[in-house]
Image (cartoon, rainbow over the protein chains, first blue to last red):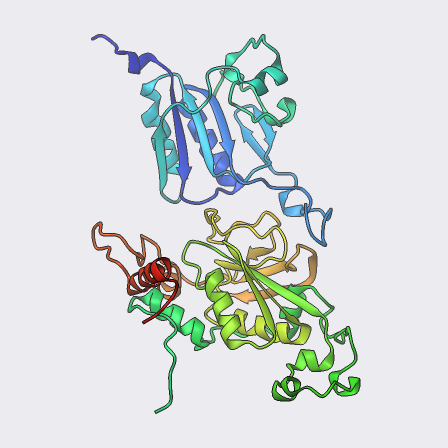
Length: 163
Length: 255
């Protein structure tokens, strides 16, 4: 049987849950997805969780609820700075798609949408040039973090070993 | 026969609820204490005297003015209270009231107020003891659901965001939390300053109850218009089209 192009090409998918995820649920979903294998890139997005009150009479007061939120996936831990509402994934190929869907169904207690498309940008933008220069060794970094993010804080590289 | 104003057209549940809000014919669902309301508003310490910006009107010796003789001042104005506010955000997921209807309620039913409407939030300004009273009426009534509405004086977001897992409207400042007993508690005042004691705002409405009580038209509950499936134009929309057409063609002439 001849494999067609869509079976071997990487696919990008968006998981859009009906509700915003708690850090615990987000971690559970991502770990289940990661265990299914075939994940090349993961990006989580959602409304920001500021550490201090940004405006108004209480400006500068700490928001304790938003402190010390960690997202542990695989062998890495990242500080969680958003309320997870959207997950972008790049999979090695189409065959991992069913596993991701099953992982979401197992872990998400409410409905979700799963869409396929081109999500991460493929060419270096002006912002990428300003941030990384014209010699990007690992192209997978493109589209993973927004221009203002700090790579050492907001990006983690996971090993290939899975439990 | 006494005249009964009809504030809003339509026979849908959203239309009926809009009429109820505008007429001030509100069902009381809970009883939050005056002290708790004052604590969440955060303008003064609960139990403290009302600060004033001018002496009581009775002591000021007002000029001889027929309008002043005709209009009785509100208790807050008579006492010379400061102007203060309360501001609410309402989730688009079937929150019982929506900003325009909060404003209609305030403008029609409350005296001495300055309501302001934005897309997902609504503020009412009034003399301090008046706004205390009006805010209590709102929070005790069906205009308020502890999960889908929230008093937010700054960082007034959440209206168009998805709900959190526990059904609360998202709030970056985490002013409210869901208690183990199923009640929603304010642990911060409306601008995010922590409270000494949590304020119990009561149990949230169930999804079905919120869908029944809401004044929001939504395609997945009561659709405002359209012709797909069961959708049809609400009488409110037909009336709106009528007003718009008359206004556009001839300037507004209701006849």
